[in-house]
Image (cartoon, rainbow, N blue to C red; front, top):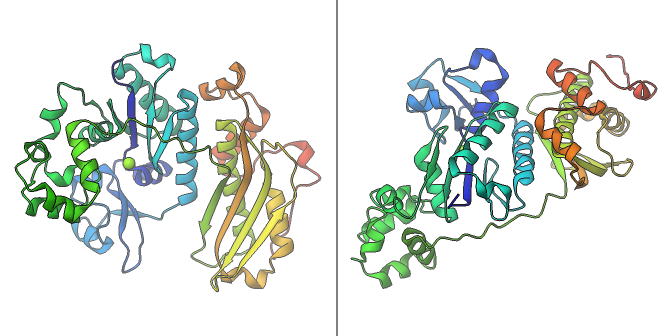
Length: 392
Ligand SMILES: [Mg+2]
């Protein structure tokens, strides 16, 4: 391949995750967002987008466009799971992974075996892998710098692949409205239009007063100009591997003990999937309970080191021991984090985790329980510890 910088961006990430949860939602207009009077759309699937429903639109307006619109609640603990799982997968491809946001990454294939593949082969490998494992679609852009890779993605949405190369990039982006340029927001694009820059190509024509532009938008102008000329940054800012993984869940309605148990089960299950898929282990568990008053109870749970699998009974037990049920209806948010996490060195056999050969007993348990959405099976060694509390 000639171009080694790729940008991977999930297609309507939150909405697709919610869509996958219920077969009845498939191919129907769906948004993730608040149901309240002031609720807005935080993510819309492509069926909804085709009707003109967009992110940040008030839900009331979206419902006027399509009264049967499916409004799904946001489940950030799920989005974190998928985000971390895809990031972990990309890290097996290359060390050079930059996190753009919860659902986008930049990678460089420098010094990897994939350099001998074509750009198309690599992009379709990634797309197929992600779809096969997580039933999610993405769009991939490729170029020689991050800005153009991102623009290639934007031009190829949804579920596409695009390359901006040295021969085609001017034709493909110079006629675009300046507001379509990545990093140029609404305010900046209005300012630039007032100063004579209407499309991206106007930047290179230089029929404007540069001093005036710089006075108005400052140093941002330097990077805008560099990007338009093809001198965008090639540096992948690898974030240090996360030191912890966690899940946070907002409590909207009052929960009783059994509902909290179910919540801890879901959180644990989602964390275990990340641990197994990414081959991580952890040492400590911290449980944080935040109340409506903004008081926080922090519970550090005793744990073994280099643990590969989290047992939810530990959390349920500590929660029950420390939090009186008179306080249940004052809980605003619950979070569980595992720290520090360490990626176990990949051996060839462990690499197979990413090839569906789940052979580890813990991963089998997680997968079975996950597909049944309940704690259907557990190890006999857990039997004694298995925490049971009759409902009152
Ligand atoms: Mg996206």
